[in-house]
Image (cartoon, rainbow, N blue to C red; front, top):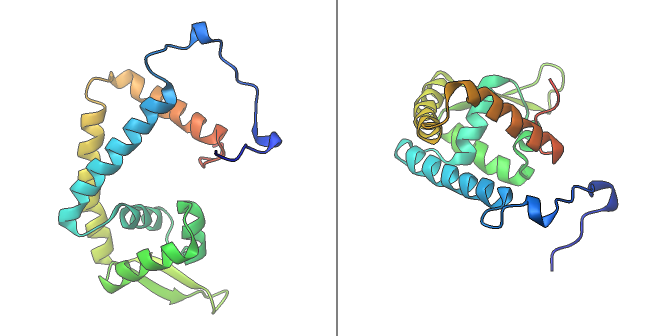
Length: 164
């Protein structure tokens, strides 16, 4: 039996049974979407020799160069040990450089190499194609609303995307 959430994490968000469609819960639909995206992304990245965690790390470093391994692990919601493995593979491939911080010599700052930027751009093509397929029948005008709603849901579960 799963552990109960702490009282401060539980909100009364009861939905009466007559308001909830019996055939599909939103949690189930989002879970299916998550699994489909993960599977599609892994299949698309495999020919490039990149894993999903590696791609996520590359995109985080592209967005904010100079992060430490610990900062990346926190942003990716993985353990430091897991991030160390991901980074070792990226450094070995010459996609990421490590250099001592000018402020704290014991901290290694991470940056994308030129090859790292190129591979990240190739991975983006894969991700863009998946997104295009996923959103094929979603009208352009609703895509921003959809993203805003998903961000709100993520924030409500304290899973990232701080308020802008």
